Image 1 (tube, rainbow, N blue to C red):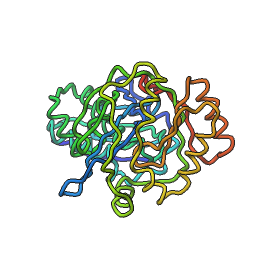
Image 2 (tube, rainbow, N blue to C red; image 1 turned 180 degrees about the vertical axis):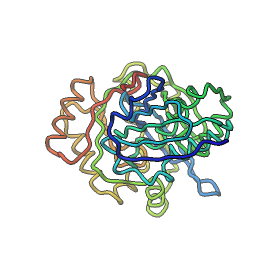
Image 3 (cartoon, rainbow, N blue to C red; image 1 turned 90 degrees about the vertical axis):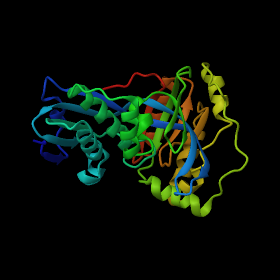
Length: 314
């Protein structure tokens, strides 16, 4: 007998810790340090080249035993979530349950800390973290090939979010090259509360931009020294920036605000936006810049984070 579905939204955070048997996974914010559009396939999918790292903060996913499949959603960003049937966690859970022919359920709790549709992989990261947690809860092992098949059905970012390690991504997001030797970085993430869907940004790119025929040479190896690494990143770009700004002009203000911080070494948009990041020499300077930006723009979402540390906070 297959488990039933029960879905609830906007619950108090105490629901995340009711069970002593729970498994907790962090769904860390994804940051595209650069993003090149290399071409477009006949089916309309774009070919990309991107270097992706993960922050030490993100959404929190917890799962615990249950006869049915119950999804609870809470947290400061839960109000902006789509209907549950459109949530990637719902889709990923259903997909995994069908793949492994699950005969038991799970209580899945999502604490939503990251902005919705913001270019830092919130939905994909949540879905990937849910899969990792459910596999542990149900004591099931899947091959890399099986996990890749599931992730491709979820979305382009799901595969890299499943492993949540520094990775160069090419193709349509299915080709992954891990780059574990990179230096840790410290950043300020800023989102101006402007919701941008990946679909709309790529649509704007198709109508208003041309795929660059002369592309920046991407280093074969990324530096272990953070200052050299940032120098390497300065030669790269995010090809979706202009398209995103055409839909959400305030992104220009965010980039200028980051650039004007005395200690900012590099500023760029992440993914399809609208979240932008600035890189700083250390976490203390990043926190100081975040406080200043937040004070001057109280309605913006601003967060100082460490990147590429493999130490996500719960």
